[in-house]
Amino acid sequence: MFRPTGAYTAIVTPMTAEGHVDEAGLRRLVDFQIEGRIDGLVAVGTTGESATLSKEEHLRVVQVVIEQAAGRVPVIAGVGSNDTRVTLAMTRAALELGADAGLVVVPYYNKPSQEGMFRHFSAVADVGLPVMLYNVPGRTVVSISAQTVGRLAPHPNIVAIKEASANMSLGTAILEAAGDHITHLSGDDFTTFPYVAIGGHGCVSVVSNIAPGLMHDLVDAASKGDLEKARPLHQKATRLARLCFSDSNPAPTKHMLSLMGICGADLRLPLAPIEPELAAKLEQGLREEGLLS
Image (cartoon, rainbow, N blue to C red):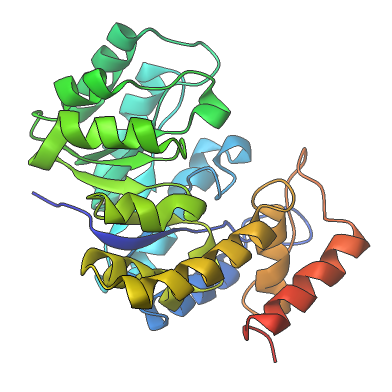
């Protein structure tokens, strides 16, 4: 069974100025990631503007990423929603497209109980596609509990969790509750280093959109217990994370990718372009970190 480890990028979805998915830009981004030594890709997660893509666009993005990756790295498809029936349909579609796993977020807005979450994730896992649980209470309001993750972990198709609460106490409890049944990935760039240091197996990163090699090296060093190497990488990743999250995700990251010549900065409403003052700070930050000549 597929078990994701290392640094995965939650890739942005490039758009054209007319608001269409920019497939050429998406393919360039995939190649940039793989050439930058990333360990895997997550398509159409939160950073991929999944909330404003149609079902057809969503699945086309997944298909393009799988095609362009061409087996060089695993591809995890965002398939979650706040409707179990929709999530099941998207999971079946991602399985047919050849995704290595599905990223399934805690259902948002309707605030399910822990029992509701358990039943939701169990039903999705029964489809047959390996499942990465996704806990991001900053967006879903409710958080999955360590106990619920522990209940889910023995399911043969639940293979990992993306833990994006930035709550190290919760992360530690999840590690204890689920153990080696699943792999544990940080979904928060700021806490990737400590999360791996306490037993995590990697990350799903936004920063790696612009610096895939950095996040690969950080996870590798932390996994090996090489703290002297990991600490400066963590500091650099933290500085870049401050840039990436200086406005609504993924607006700053898309702007920086546009400066780097990889894809455009266009977004879909209700996300708006960043202000000129921030744009100048982002360009300065990229230059200071050696990512823009």
